[in-house]
Image (tube, rainbow, N blue to C red; front, side, top):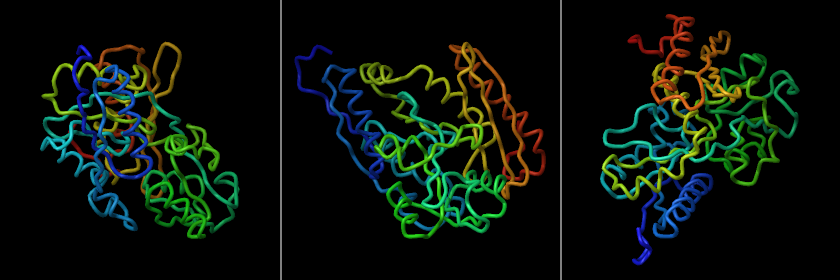
Length: 318
């Protein structure tokens, strides 16, 4: 690219929520910087099936793919050139003809606890209502506080904060990554990672392109990659894929920095939180993608064997 022609317009598909728009614009800014202004992002917003689901659980309506289906189709049809997602919302297998283009630097992966009545889950009184639509968060909450009531809480960050203010629940959870990106980190108390292990890839933005994208674009998008974040994404998504992870199973995973190594902690819970199966393992930083995936797969195998037939949401093939 010589800089002697008009800037190229790159159509970036995203959901229309404030957080999704922040993430898409973050990617657009990165593309402009990496291309020295020769590629300019144009944000194209979509209302997904998941956005239209305001009261019901994802488990009852098709799982996490509801947040990506319309974007996936638009990318496949050539209506947009990229899609930008919260990686934890992306199904474990991308549609045919699509690949990940980049993983920008990870934001705070911890869960945030929000309540006008308590600083943390353990301070809530018995019978308090905790709002969440996540089976993982529900199971983890039940494991720690079987005496609280879980109520379904759906919607974007602003919607869930409003529902909390209206007294529909006494407490709820929001990802610290989203709150931080929106300048709202101070409304929540971060929960230590090992006290509530987050969803696989929480805090990571996933940028998806078509496989047939031209070489110039591929090179610019590759410049957006943050090496450690990319490696963590590969490990955690391999864990999820090996368990056939979906919104129908409470699954948590996070890759911890152990100096020269990555440590993956993976966990699966029973629906009611009364049983937990977990494992940890290491691999060297800078390992090949195959080796990174192998760590995720191995920890998944250990967890799966521990759970056995008690977790029917898993697939049986290995």
